[in-house]
Image (cartoon, rainbow, N blue to C red; front, top):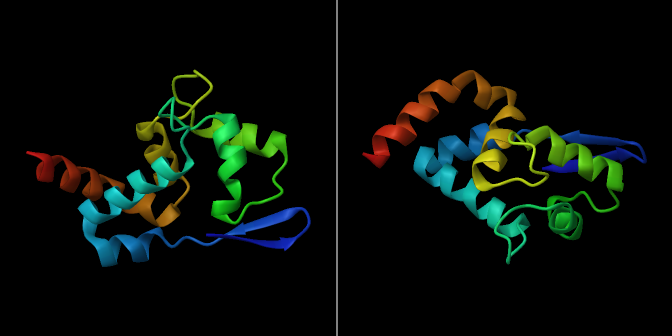
Length: 116
């Protein structure tokens, strides 16, 4: 998902639209949930600074500074508790994907109606 261009630049490639097309909305949401579980603190069931730092290499982001990790957490921390729960993580992933933001209304409707 990320590749390093040089020492100070990280370039993100947006694979989410292709994943959504291939997996469908249910499968895509399941993959986001799997990603959350991969990054979360197993005891606290949330993504913490320590769990994100420990698992950042799984995202191809090894060597991120503590400030960068804190910034990532702040970006998604909607309730200001210092951690990301699964809803905050999924919301952040949608916000970071310009293509998904453009079609997020349809995805939300699909997710709601499939749960009924």
